[in-house]
Length: 341
Picture 1: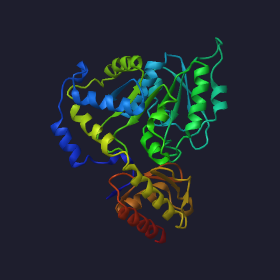
Picture 2 (picture 1 turned 135 degrees about the horizontal axis):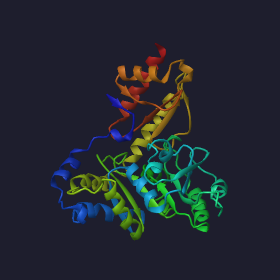
Picture 3 (picture 1 turned 180 degrees about the vertical axis):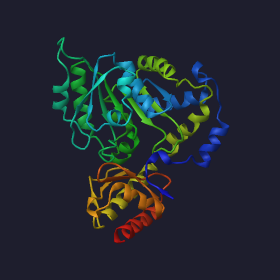
């Protein structure tokens, strides 16, 4: 089965499994797990932040960022198709007690002037703006890279209004590899950042959040409150450390495969690309095939390909380290046969 549903479906390599077996461990709640400590130190260094914290998932990391930086009744500004808004079970409201204020962006990019206009004035009728959230790369926009200059402009506006900025950088390393801009540069224009180890980087579990030492001290308590205080978690951190050491540049392969797949789709009657492919996500409109997304996904599965419905007429394909160039060629042949039939 060729699995293109997500880059979360990757399996740990044999080298990662061995690293898990050999990991030196301790009780991480006491901050005594040497492997976790190494991972956090390495991540903080790469991001140019004072401290980092290993968390169980990207969602947990994003929620901790809101819990630390907001108070109940605050408002959080984010793009209308942000992952935090669409795909995290309204956790930001359930846990942090905040409301969201969404801004319609273009391919995930909010206009700085729209962000500034959305920051609340000092008025007893209004909530207070507690946080601005960015997402890079932007999942719903097809893995679009948010330009560094856009992030910089929004950050300077936020500083002027004394509002912190959080980056949901679940696939931040994809943005870095695609542009050649170091992750440290992207992280420079946010106060806090989260990235996933378990997506394109190929580790089986976990994410990182990073920021100031004060932020991480408070984040550690919120992680505990959310049930994320793990014990001998070096067995989970070890493959994450290996992913940062060996799997970052490998993301180029996923991007190249995504572009080949997108180019192939553009030649198949009935398929229309929803956006330019910049990283490892391809969103294709199938309205021209006169099939429903459920029918299309079912036909794919019967022919050995897994993909996911992503809207009324759209399917998402995500290249990952379990998919080869040969797999991509086979997927194109399979889809052409399905449409011909």
